[in-house]
Image 1: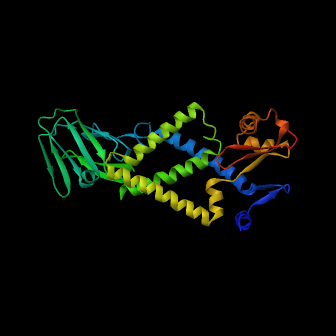
Image 2: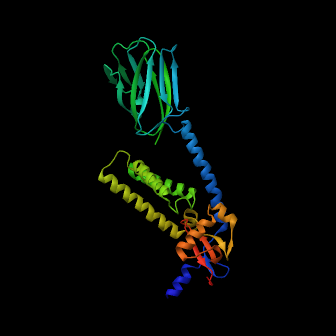
Length: 173
Length: 149
């Protein structure tokens, strides 16, 4: 009975040189080696892409700026974010203004951990979140420390009451 | 729900990355390989747990990983082709005393690796005493000595 079980369980094994029971599959081994090499290249590309900034947190591709001195508002941000990983958004106001408004998508997908300088007032509506600062001087920088909460594309508008900028980011899981 | 998805994704990612890295990657672990393995496990732990260190989350993740593992073992048992693809197949690297250099090169095995296994497993002194050397699925090298050793 035991012998029969052994014969049944080893029936798919080949005999090499009529003596060695081995489940060798050279065709599969060859394909596996090719896939391994492709996998190594993909892993290398992934690391290079990460070094360039495609996966967020630093890198030349990742750091972006929208707006200009002429537009009155400038937003420096990261193109790629990661869920639960901290990030900073820097807004520079080149015109006298005390208000910064973000559209709804921003506060739905991102948790604002801290704002420097501290705003005088924060108002949340169905459409936007409005920060009011007291006596912000020209060329003042506002820092928003953020923690993305939901993965996926993040598109929102930022405005200082006069000019509006469109920001596009991507949050990795 | 989030923990279950994390567990399943991490399981399959690790399965894929270690399959791609090849049989020999961590088979003969040196001290540095061991340290590397510890770093990988620590990184995996952070990706799995995120900021939820509760006992519930820990239990949920352990259960998820084991269920997926049991499921995969049943799946591989049912479909041997899948088992071969996921776990790989053994490969003869010394055939009847003849060294198969091309296979050794592609599999990242050299003569000293074979001799190390020959000494450790069979107490052999030289390559001439080996009839078959097989690179197993787990990356280890097994040795069948010639009869008149």
